[in-house]
Amino acid sequence: MFKRIILISSLLSLGAANADQGAYIGANIGYTNIANWWTGAMALTLNGGYAFDKYFATEAGFTWIYPIAIQYPSNSGLSGSYSAGQSFLDVAAKGSIPLSDIFNLYAKLGLGAGFAYNSAYSYNGWNAPAGVSPGIYMAMGGEFKLSRHFDLTVEDYGLIPFAGNNYGNINVLGAGVKYNF
Image (cartoon, rainbow, N blue to C red):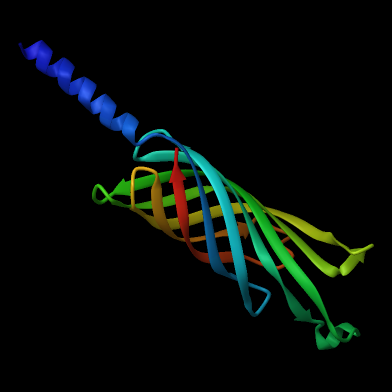
């Protein structure tokens, strides 16, 4: 009898663990601050990942930041303004702490690459990259489960370049939706 209880409880716990695993995709919209821009801009993020259980997942994402107009510095010898933008790719490990059946907190840590571009280096209408900055990607957020498939998310995330950053550290505060397959 004791062996049957252990077997049944093991199967039930395995089923519960599998209910929290699988592939997912998400989208966020937010507001970004880039250290050397002295202003902010809108950001859109798309990401996808795989949850191994309710505590651990891996994820990849892309963040596009709306270009802004920047004035040339007064000591540059140039006048006027130009358009500058930045986007970044990231790959991260995601650890979650479920606080209830419908809400959990999470943190992500990984690597990313920021792509800076501006219209001062345009060629035939295409904005040429002003530089690529690899760095550390970090995020903290929360997920509120609406249904088996949909979650609402709120996240503070960003990229800190190792060196050679063109526009500085990127920080985004965003909200969005996650779809669990």
